Length: 123
Length: 123
Length: 123
Length: 123
Image (cartoon, rainbow over all chains, first blue to last red; front, top):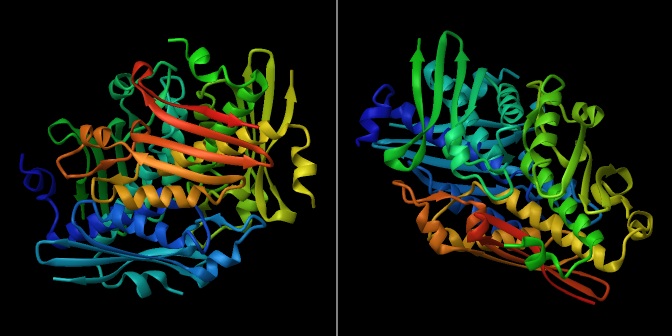
């Protein structure tokens, strides 16, 4: 079966790159939010998040930074906390044919919200 | 702050509708896969999935069907199983200005894979 | 196969009730934290959490209350937020033979931590 | 506040060790099931699972093995799959005072179920 032809011929290449990147960003957030984390485990968690989400269709690279300041803010008596969306600073690079889209999540203080948006798109 | 102007002026309305629907589909999958489910709890789970994901930006409606056949296939000795992507038949309707996009997930036997794609887009 | 005899004869009935209740509490927290929620969707989410986790072995009943005050505290510009452990007030009732154990999670201000503990055990 | 005295004096040290290990096992399962995984990302995911869950109260060590045979069985056209409970072979070592409890999950063919049980307890 030609998956692209059967399921994706109704959208443009740009739209497809945005689509795949956005799915992966939604996936990353909802898969990992809630995971126990502290300064010592931060690095292995970032690596697993990046490697696992890179497997999804059209994803070239995933860069994950768990914000240390937000991590420290929510620290508990037990020396760890649960990963929240506010701690995420992530870039997902999707590529379909000649189009590269970078999907970003970052916490926007003014909205009290970790916003997902298309940071860059090149075709 | 004008969020749309600041963060979304680099993409078209069609692209934005696809973007928001796709995020929500990735979110739905990775939030709920793993949840214990059987024929009795299927309905309340479908409802919670639909209502919670409808809250996300630009989402008008979410229709969730947990496939009973796939549910039965993976049934265990303990009369329940864990929700998998293969059981999901979901339509997410996103709307941005005059553009309506329907994002779908359904299990495709030939790919052994629950495929996410843009089922319909109207502008 | 006699599962109880093969896998659980090394622990007491009290211990088994605590074991099953504790697994289910850990499951509930990590399955649902991150779910989009607001005052309108709170009820369907509570119901799905209770019904799905009640399916696990030895669980008689699950009572879920999403704390409205904590929900409002973390509300965003977009009129919803992500479920956190701090919002959870949950009782899980496990029963094995004549032993009933109630496992509780509630946010403890002094610890800045949603504590899980055995609230009650009767044999 | 003396947390142990206030919240845990109604159970024995053995029961506490089982309680903490069981919570962590339920957490591990429901946090990570659904994560994209293949043979290349298996190792970083195992490491992140082990390190993050080791942070929880009373947990000394977590050993995670994602079963390669089960991983291959569910492989898709896209060269990755979603982590399922059936792939998990995990030992969680909890220690409270002089009591050590090992909680195990492994897939039991006969039950078509990934069973969690107390593999070993020493006091």
